[in-house]
Image (cartoon, rainbow over the protein chains, first blue to last red):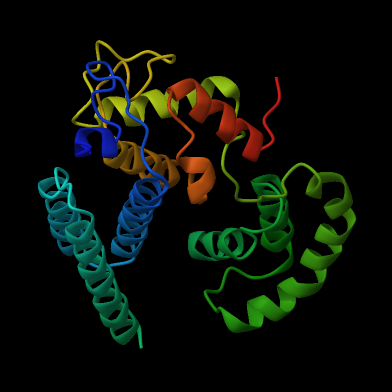
Length: 98
Length: 155
C-alpha cells in the first residue's frame, strides 16, 4: 500500500487519519529528521552570516522539495546525498578553522 | 591636576566606589606639589593608597563585587521569549498562536518545521536540546516546561 509522504512527515494530520508507518518507514523518517537537524547545526558554525543564510535556505529548499517522495530507495539515496553534503560542509569548516 | 585625578580613577576602576578616589585626591593635593609628572607620582601614591584601600576594602568591597551573568530566568520570561521566537517564525500566524496550540494539529506545521523551531529555541536560550527530547516538544507549553526543567526554574 502506498503510504503518502504526507503521512510520512506527519503533516495535515487534521485531514487524514495517520496511517501506521511500518518500522522501516518510521526509522527512515527519524533518519531524515536527524540529518536535517545535524545539517542545521553544522550550518550554524559557518562564520559568515550571509553564507549561513544561503546555506540554510538551500537546505530548507532541498528537504522540502523532496518531501513528497514515497519510494524507499529514492529516499535512501537522498539521505545518502544529504550525508555527503554534510560531510563536505564539515570538512570545509574544519579546513577554514585550521 | 585633572589628568592625575582621572588617572587614579581609571586605575582604581576595579576597586570600590569613586568615594575613595576623591578621598585619595584630597590626600594627594595636600601632600604633593602640583607638578604634572606621572611616574614619581605613582610611587608616591602607592603607600597612602594601599593603606586607604586596605582599610576600607573590607567594608566597601562586599557591595561592589562585579560578576557578569545573565538575568535570572523565570517561567514568565521563558514563556515570553518562546512566544516571541515563535511569532518571528514566518510559517506561524501570530494571531492563532497560543501556548497550547499544537504545532502539527493546530498550526499546520510539519516535522521539518518543528525541527527548525526547536533549533531556534536552542539559539535563543543558548543550550542544546538532544534529538530524542526535541521531537516530543509539540506545543509552546511543553517547550516552556522543558526549558524550565533543564534550567532549574521553579515557581
